[in-house]
Amino acid sequence: MDNESLKTKIAQWVPNAEFEETGTSKAQLLNVIITPDKLLDVAYKLRNEEDMKFDFMFSLTCVDFPEHFMMVYHLRSTQTWNEVVLKVKMEDKEKPQVETLCHIWRTAEYHEREVYDLFGIVFKNHPDLRRILLDEEWEGYPLRKDYVDPVNMISL
Image (cartoon, rainbow, N blue to C red; front, side):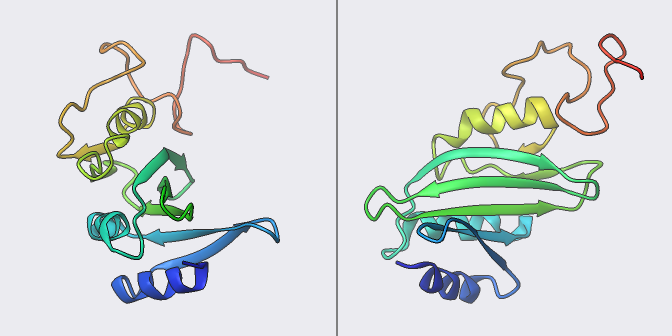
């Protein structure tokens, strides 16, 4: 399935989805930007629709923008080798949360724990949401732009 066909299909599911293409002239990667309330439905359809079959989530991360967080999921079909980047824009910076996807892609389980640990994003319905890299006593989320580490601060 080419990017135009993929856009058309996803636009039917989520009429307000935004689309971007990144990459080189030979390989364009489709980026799909949706809201958190659409995540489960879109993820399930990308995984299970007969002409999609994005059965492998090979990367999941978060980006901290000044006004919002953006979850970024890199998906691949091991049958067609198509790839898509699913992005979820979270406007609530005080209590960011999104549904877990580990019941759709098992690889999400540890990636979500890492994002929780370093950004503080809560994954609703995650089976084991706890810190994975830092001690349980650690305060704050070190990859957030507003994180302050008084011990290691360098002042100019």
